[in-house]
Length: 541
Image 1 (cartoon, rainbow, N blue to C red):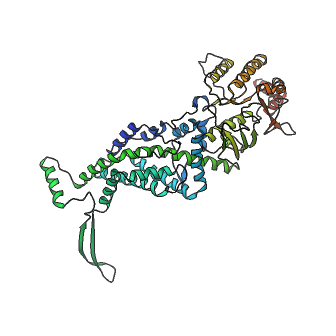
Image 2: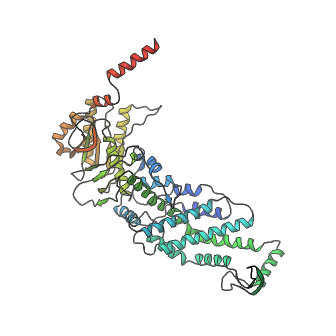
Image 3: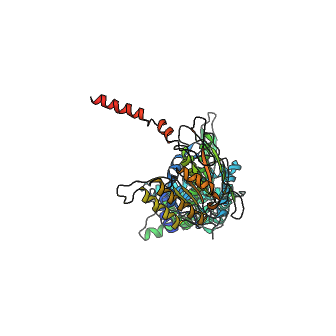
């Protein structure tokens, strides 16, 4: 059995639809145009067989699709390669809950970082694998000659990919060594031996020795054939009389085939026998994309003067903080004109509920979004958006940051928020991370505070690591006086001497939301609006 060169899971796993892909490979060798079907099959592949997060609870609020579109790309030697964004989205959102799988991925990424030769090998393998699948997708001409040549090109590229896996990754120390192990197993099969013999036969059917006479002016004066020897040691070689007899028998049977047509039949047979070994390579293309494109996100952050790291994960039984991040930033802000302002955040307890307060536009929502993205990227085995991070594996992620409106909605804002809260407690796994923005701000303060307190009490029962922003400042200060009972911690936005946000956070509860200052900054004052009204009246008069 050929080992699966799975680069994402501690226990090797084939997540792509094996039968559908086998059928597709068969159609391709017959000359059928298959368009984007390889791309679609890879996008639909399962990423991990183990327990994983449920994307519907967080991916929209964290804008995962936008993050991939804006910050994940793949360039090799100046050439831009179109990545499979749907596969990357599945790979990111099917976040593993097995610490060993996360560490397996981290070791692959770390080896790519630390060994330039391994990185160059991975990029070369990706380039040739991309070329192999591109050959399958290329439109065909309808002549037998072109089909035969094209199919031979597919076989040559297949052999090149397998040989690169064997030759370039034999000394790899991370999961990349699975490429070598898979290639070793393939090269030991009868199908590979037949492939190699066929390609050698096609490229070296015979050896011709010539004597060439040159004149003083460099022109050929004479040419004499000394010998012509066919390569008889190749398994595909047959005696000329046998080749002639085969042609005669086909002619008697009403079949007229050229040598090229016969070769094409042989090529098809060899490819069909080899194709099962090629199936895991399609999956491998997407997995290599994930690692190489993640490096592009790290490089983009570095261009803005920001660092990303491979986080350290504490085991569940270890004490200490639930989360520690230095120079944390929100990667969704990398495209803005002004670079994100990094901050450092840590908890005291191992399962804290942190209440975040501060003025509007002070960075509270962006902070908790950055924390959730740190957990998502870090637990996926990739770089986290901070210079240093210590995390713990979470069993799930529940994020509620954005308000969605629709024309046919039945419930109002508060009703929809309460439905989300109910879903949270019905579906959330013990030991998850919960991120809630402006909880119960869609109702009057007294009722909102009542629901807010209820949520905090219930959160304590299921022990997630929770981050909750609120504008109920008086209630937050009251909770601070009895924080031990609910296991609460508090963060507030730090302000500069002009009472503007520094986008840094300190322990405590904010004294004011600075609504008046925010209104003034946005031009929403009595004087400004009165002037606008008077101006409109003057124009109308």
